[in-house]
Image 1 (cartoon, one colour):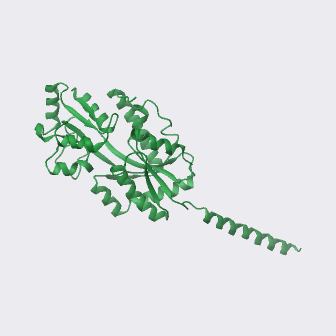
Image 2 (cartoon, helix red, strand yellow; image 1 turned 60 degrees about the horizontal axis):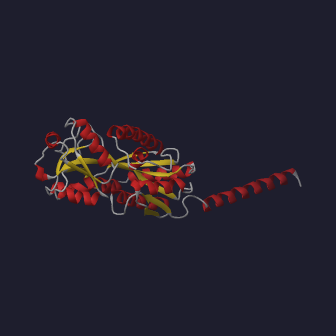
Image 3 (tube, rainbow, N blue to C red; image 1 turned 45 degrees about the horizontal axis):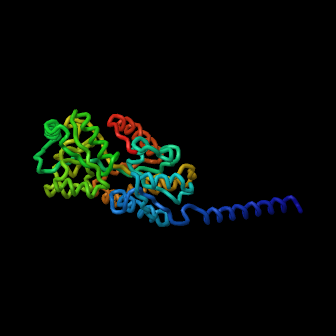
Length: 325
């Protein structure tokens, strides 16, 4: 064969390989099947709603269903453990929340490393907690609450969605800072706790605006302060805990996570889809209507945020002396 013929044949062969490779890449491009989106709490709650809103839009962008799968129990531990053990292929993800930063310090055993065993994708937003009181107490401010707590010496009660939960820890830290004793009443979820607060069976509780706004508007709850850096637009007349003299930032938050070892190309594709999702005005409005502050972060920023939250709550748990067996 002449040199020119050899060169031509080689070029044709190389082109054929390139086309085959491109075709193969298209056949196996991510995602090419449904994606599971785990949550660690029951359906119908804040995390489930956020996950469905986000999953629906990411599905439209990436062309595959994002199926929300609830695996409730142990403050999200069951679902997070499943994520840590899942194949790192991008087909099992999780919408993690603030419990991811709390569990290593409040649970006796956590079968994973909250940093090393996961790959952050991006942050969605947060929902600050509101310090509410039963209106029948006649409390108008945190100052009133502190005075009553001192007078009752442990007789004032506060509810939470469970031992070691964010409302539990946040209220315990507030009581410590205020130098008062209050009695913790844990519940197995937010709905029964809120029902008892509205009914006057417990005195106070930190709640998200998502579940408490209607009760506040109807006068069934008295908002004393917002545990956040600034006042919330839906409650312009309610001061922050810092304004009341007790600085405290406490908010439910949520972001998307994959197992460690997930290919960078897959993480990058998910990161972009999530960023494009939370940038959509319709999505931002739906989340804002739920009391969510949409503050997008990319994968690197979200990873740093998780570590900062873990450092924050590690010290807080120690100060509050909370440990769940």
